[in-house]
Image (cartoon, rainbow, N blue to C red; front, side):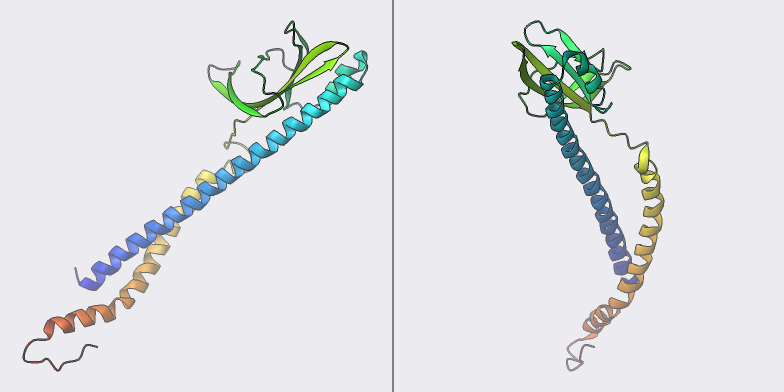
Length: 206
């Protein structure tokens, strides 16, 4: 294979691979950013919900607490239990598991998924309060299993795959075209240098 074609081909392959890796890195960074933002948003929701439930428990009459708690978003799983007896007084999930206390901090853990044999990733927060000489604990949790098979990202993997092939082909052809002509002067200089000997030292390189 001629030097020009060989060098151009190798450079084009490397350029296409670098471009492909760069695109994948951008996409990966986007997903990491999305997940981090989602975690921050979820943590903020938990803290706000903990404050809201605290206000309901302390300031509402006993017969109005359940009605007020129904206003909590369904994706927030809450339980209010007695610290001494561990008896759950209010909850929107009958299969709630009491988790180690976090004392107002949001933490991440795993719990058994009752609908399958797998574990769920959740974030949760606990907060201790007192009402009528009772020591209560509010526990609020939310699953953080991000399902990309549904929603706006459902077709993203297929779209990326379909877009990557023409991008690689086009980048290869364009870089091949560019490197082929940019390498011509170098090849001419190389060939001229090889032809210079003791009898023609006065020849100039192009």
